[in-house]
Length: 309
Image 1: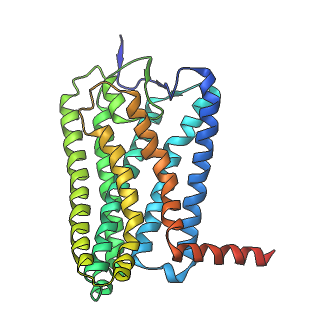
Image 2 (image 1 turned 90 degrees about the horizontal axis):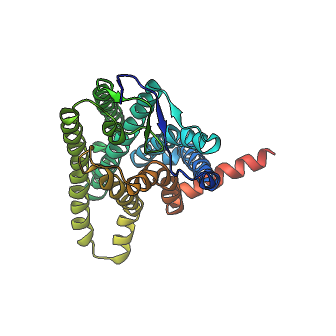
Image 3 (image 1 turned 180 degrees about the horizontal axis):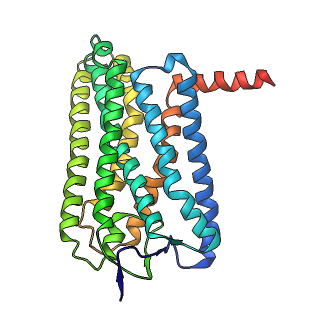
């Protein structure tokens, strides 16, 4: 097969059976719209309510912004391919999609760790919490995470852009990801694989260790609280975060903790759907349905809008 450094690709999507395209389109369109609506409402609730202008909700608004962008990076192209049956994508378009996908994936990873640190400071050091998590420090943590995410994504994209690929080949996925792209390369990908796996492993395991150590301290402090009501109150703000952490890392590690050049399976596509579409859609509902402050803020906003009419 011929090789080129800038070939066009075809995203093979979720199924080669045309009869399944319409049901898939309907399901994922609903998920996509729910994800957009849920994250927009959560951003609106946090931005409009002065009582939610705290470090915890600041990081939650950052997570909602990332999730909104995350699903917008992959879902529209997938829906277009399911609707038209045409999954063709240019090389530049493929790398652009991968760049933003990597940015928001790394941001999700870093924000979950930062949110664990915030909960650790709030529960383990409540008296010093206002001094530890000042607005300036929160902005530094958020902007630093964005900077790291863009640098890592740019590094990955540059590695992929230097490879040669087989022409007229289909990507067995619904978006451009590093694993299927490396499988289609006719260059020696060993060096790129090692670099990408090492950096991904360091980022992923550093965040997991940060989360585990933070919650280890939290559970130790909560266990020493004498009353059951005090324990429930302390853990109430952690349950939603833990649910999102488990859902995100289970699917991501199932996909990426193995060499990129190994064969691409349908199970990886299902896992990718979970962390690129299902998890960002569920996150705002997990946080809002189990959070009285967010629910009351949303009710106030909706009541104001109704009164205007």
